[in-house]
Length: 123
Image (cartoon, rainbow, N blue to C red; front, side, top):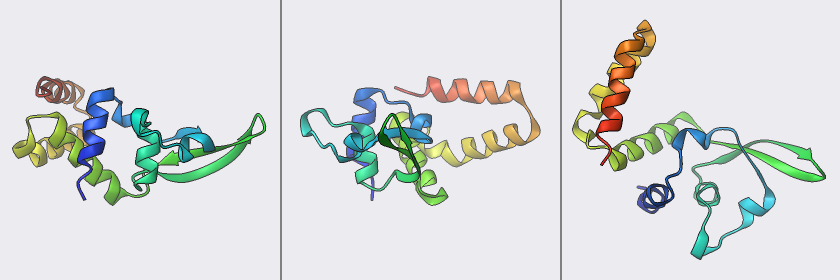
């Protein structure tokens, strides 16, 4: 389903989306659920948008390395954030294709221009 509660929380807390891969947390973050001050990582994990990719022990505690479980979830989550954060809902596919083409061809100037356009569309 649509993670509208998550999107509102991310907008309110100004959480940076690219930081969702390789997040390292301890068990207390995964198990905590303070409704008054909910941690976005906890919510993403408990709702299935993040999964445990690896574990290791550091300073006598287990550390969990989290990431988005698969490409389908990543695409769906990214699409939801594009829709929530920008005014480019109708242009989304075109912008995605343009960025892909610019990345594939090494068009750095074009990519910078497209990214500036994306940022300019954020209300």
